[in-house]
Length: 261
Length: 240
Image (cartoon, rainbow over all chains, first blue to last red; front, side, top):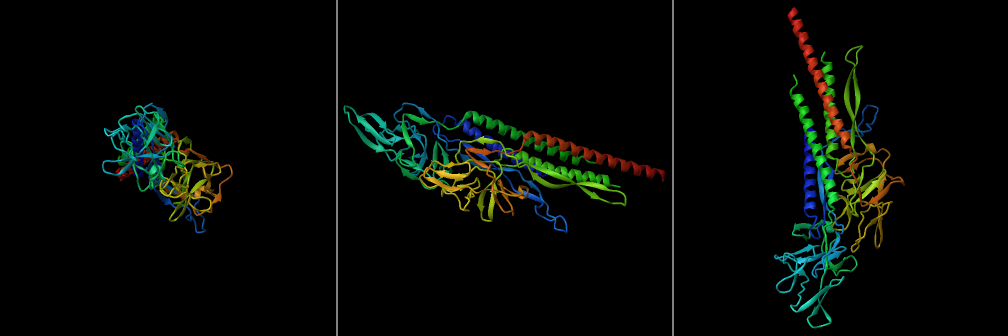
């Protein structure tokens, strides 16, 4: 029976919905995490009586046909790129992006990955690296004798050396933007890779037109709204239950048919 | 003599189709822009004898409930919902398709596309491209898409004389042979919102219970009829 399969498509889709929501909730405190949302689409339709077919010799046209759909599927798990809140940490090497753009990170493989998580650290050589120790592009090295680091909103990294009053510029943070940032491929560890859907990276300095500004001493929180996720979770659970009820009803009807004398 | 069994059978077959429609509604309870479907039954008359009439049931049509679904706020600037009558137009290789699902995205050429990647058309029949270097997309109530550099196009929002004539082709899309007409002035585009499915779960669940019971009663009638014919044959057989 068709409804058995339709109920199954509903349960599968809701299952994926719950998985997406649980990943959002699990990452509700992940720096720079962007929430995802499952988007549903109806499946193909089967025509039992085609719309516009004629119902008599006189050419009377059927106003509405009998079309039965085949259920539902998840068309996309889209990323919502809304800005997260800025959480003040007062850590000199915490940098938040306020606006669009990604930091560029060099992976051990030599590839470039992109991230919104600006919780940077210094490597033993004094280089600015991510929490996993991957260098941030362009490479910026802070000398050992620096006593103060300041990063301004356009991404210039300025240091003050011990015993000196003047600051000196040791580098410039750059951001990358994409035609379709929602199309970046997430690889975990807060990193994204360029994909066919995202388009090529365009780099520029923070504050340039189309690029966000950076804020030192702050981190961008995840944009997950936990209350919203929980309500979506409840809806998904109920929808799952209803689809399982469809399967149960179908089963009972099939049972009756098989018990016919 | 077996007419009553055939009538009950026609009822059961119609109910099974109805269960398919109802379960499709339930499966699409979270589908953006989905419209609830209802089956329309008609009587099918037959005259087997001179003075008798037997009426069967036939599933005549599936009609869509065209009321607006509930709006949910998503915070995504490319999520668009239509309040009131109307459809967005998307382009496919085989001509325009119409949709109520406004969960749009940008592709790698910065064209506005639907969830399936089909370009959303402007009223000049061209896809809408958001210029590079712009980040702030605003869509006004009449469907004009603008960025900080100015307007880039107006969404083609259309309606049809008889929306029931539109055929679902899946993926939230409709196709029709009718000529599109401009949507009425009261149709507005709302940005950052999505129109949910207009399926009322409680109604669908009660409907499902009801049709299951009807299916059972048709079954019981067939069983009784079967019993009656058997008893009749047994009695007739004994008297011989």
